[in-house]
Image (cartoon, rainbow over all chains, first blue to last red; front, side, top):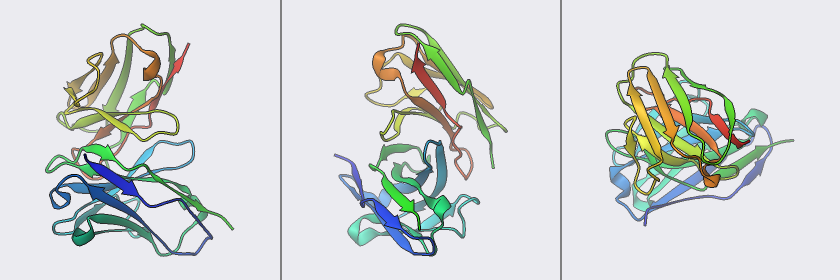
Length: 119
Length: 107
């Protein structure tokens, strides 16, 4: 069974750093893209970027490039989303999702990680 | 970036109604379009890919059509479990933008 299990909810203050995770299991982790999607409170879905764990090929949305870092560790079949300095506007649910190759359609999703940034 | 628009932004319908949602891309995307369903507090779920391909396990009352810039999602006979928000997404070019969503509510 394909599963993507994300790390738990986080409460941070502005300016703090954060790294959330997404562990894949039940499939060949190296052969599929992993994507990250943001959903701000009461809003729609924002495509942030994708990574191919096999070679760490990473593609970012221009809206998120420089704001976050996407990475992956093949050995632990885990993908990560990282911030160096959080802002209140980063408050959102962040989903990871598995994407096919070459068509990166998100067929399996993690349960989401709620990130709250507040002073 | 390719911009995706959806219409309507929301609609009210009754069980058994036929519902059609439209998605438009700001430039041609061939058939590189997916549809997702998201219920309140839940994770998005893939319904269709390649504009008209039904994902496994998705009821056949869901169908999609279109190519180029204009696409539709149709629910042939709305069921109680179909009340949700529906998003289109293009995967033709990065970033793979989502539409703003269409909320389907109970009339």
